[in-house]
Length: 387
Image (cartoon, rainbow, N blue to C red):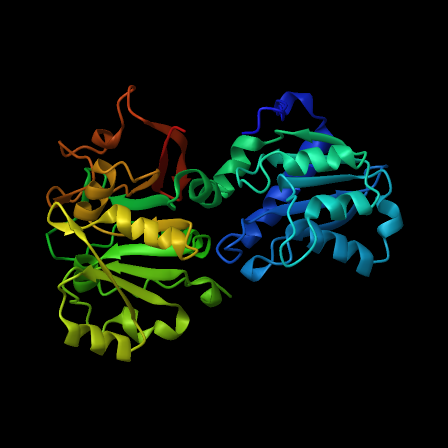
């Protein structure tokens, strides 16, 4: 964070400010999964007497930015005069650099607004406090930090990309009440309820890439598409860790390639004829180095970041999840626990005993519990690595 910019606490803002920033956050959520290479941002424009003028979010492919979209809507509604001395609420610091369009900070100054409230500072070296300074130079009152924590969650992929050079990695694990992910090795076991499955499809719609291992593909034959009403177009890029290129061309993944890209990561020495067959079916093949007997996960994640995939959801078995965890590459863990026990089977990520409580991280762990609740009769627990 730029040391010249001092964020305020949530308590420093009015109830009106909080209301409008919550709305901006909702619009940012609408852009998740399809705004990259730009972050998913929301913007709300309000008049000086606290009337809603326009809203915007980052559009598909990253342009227009949320601020430009909201200003355009105000113009189309012939309400630009109502912006004079008004306030813009933005989930991320407005940009200060010119790309395919003007800097958002300049657009907000030109609109005649009197105040800008944004949630999260932008770590991009082209911004990083420069947007804040440009707005102040333009005569606006600028405040930051409102609902920063909650908006950082929505911006997690972008922030990870800029700060660590790799995607933000979330894994989803579903277990029985006694801690098993399946009744038998190599056998698919349905555990969670319909509400939990809809929740997972919503997760898929909000990420750039969905990562799995070849064993999961061979056992479950998943499509890994986003099956929500109207959600087909939001199926993320599907990524398979497949050292020996065993991905079947007749699998559901390959058969649904029209719904989203499929990339398989393989070892340098993987069979070239298998590569040719997959490429003929439309699958992209990326060869990686190996590390500790498997594909180099850090290299795979670096490739993802370099190819505009900043937010990954992992849907895989114990081996891949444990490898990511042990390599320090797992940022968030979503644990869905079904109410039924199955008494025996394959244990999950961290289980040493056959109890659901065994997934709880110790107090000195880098992971903290950030959310818990229920999806019908399934329990939802989310753990996240502390910054």
